[in-house]
Length: 468
Image (cartoon, rainbow, N blue to C red):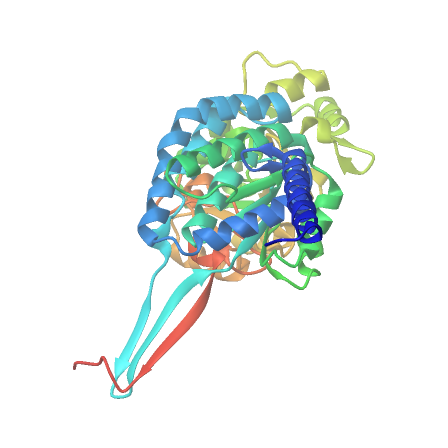
């Protein structure tokens, strides 16, 4: 039999437990905006951590099913994503963003990227496999916001991880929309909630917290040089994809008509927002006029008037800086705002400059392409190395001379070297190979895929399982 005091203690305890549970539920409700979005980044990390603990025990087949569902369902939204992105960021072209989203959905590697190494012999068997890192923290850019989230999500989930995103503030709404969609698609396929999370507000403090949070095991940074440098100071494993300033070399042996078309297509694609896009052309003097002529035929508007060139310079480069108002804008819009008349809708603006011109030395990220005449291949290569600024990102060359192509590829030391094709061939668009929008030149992973989001583990069995 319970006496009165014991009964009173039990009742108090039950009431207190109910109150605590209610308080916890209220707190969780307040912190959650639903479908992977939380009011603060700390909760987003905690929930991603919990989700990964569950996901880590799931089979490879379950991972495959989730990724397959992501591919199938997101293909329904490529147009909507492109329209929402351009509306919010005021950058790029809808038709090109549709292609980029489709590329990320279809050609980002999944579980098939996780190869296994096996060694057998007299002393037994050694197995090397790729296991989850845990919770990844990812900072994404305004230039390729949805593509990068799709790309990094598929890679992270294929590797058995969860991922927390800090989107660029100027692309916050489309990124949160996409993260919500991804959570719905994942749970529909049987995956746990909150494998992909973010905070509801895009604040600098969120990045700082992400970089120092003890539950974040790896940082995946796609952005400018400064944010990559900051991440590298965190003490965590970092995959850093920084800026580029890709030069294009065109020599006298090139198929000039094709080179011109490839350059216009590559540099004009999504208004030059991709970091791999052609940023300046170094062409040998003997074929310069013919290249420019064919670039005009391919849809470029070539400016020769000195006053017009000055107008363009004053518009897109102000106070010693690239004018952000024109990043990713259409060529026609840039010409209109510069007071330069053009009778058609050009894909690209071209002009001749010297090698020291700001349009050569700075990455503009707009469809404005400087063309510089070069005496010979040796001068072109030397200047290409200088204008690339040691970023080791991307370079392009048009030539039929295999020796020169080999020399340039070796000397440039870029992560990507494209020969006789538009720059976007490097991403697997009208080119072979898988795609990525996280190109890690600074940290050396190159074109990242699921295997880069894992850690190698070795399992050794002594004296058995070799049957040779």
